[in-house]
Length: 277
Image (cartoon, rainbow, N blue to C red):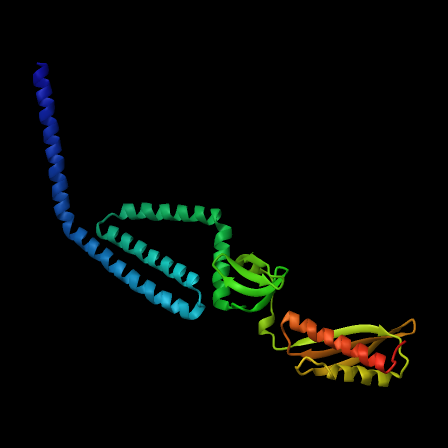
């Protein structure tokens, strides 16, 4: 009797397996056209993704001039197109429930990654805005977050500037984008302002003429524009002078040299004419 029961069980298992295999075979045959269509659709999406990645990369290179931005952005577009193609292939196979589950999973993962890497995302978005808006470019002299220097590299995460002391400073793009930037390279001209008290041994008019002459004799090789001299106050027998003029020397070091020479020339001409003592 035990032998008959075992034989009966084995026969039932064989029948179940055969039935299941037959069902799978029929299902595969029925789904074969859809499977071929799904594979064909996926191949088409891959071709389209590669083509658009190349076109988008070339277009971004012309706009941004940044290989890192262009490569990453075009790769993101390539990945998105492949995901759309994959979901389309699943729909062709009538696997709508699988598509819904995948979309829900992608949404949850995206939300988690967004919270985990929010600083990185913020820096990336800021870097993209910097590249496209171009508040500065490579080689420009800028001042940002308390650092002054020339821009040497603009990456997705950070901007690198080299200070005039030779230090390389890496500033996160989020801080660069959200805080004020002074771009000296985009400035057309700058105003030099000097204020000092002086004991005047000459008349006010003669003193004004001497200072104006000293400014005009600036030996920088560049024009001095719109010189102005004003007396702003009198304190304890001294006259307070305010001197200003415009210069096309916009770089910080050159600007300091122009101001230095102006002070030297003013001091020398006042001493030569014994304007104070």
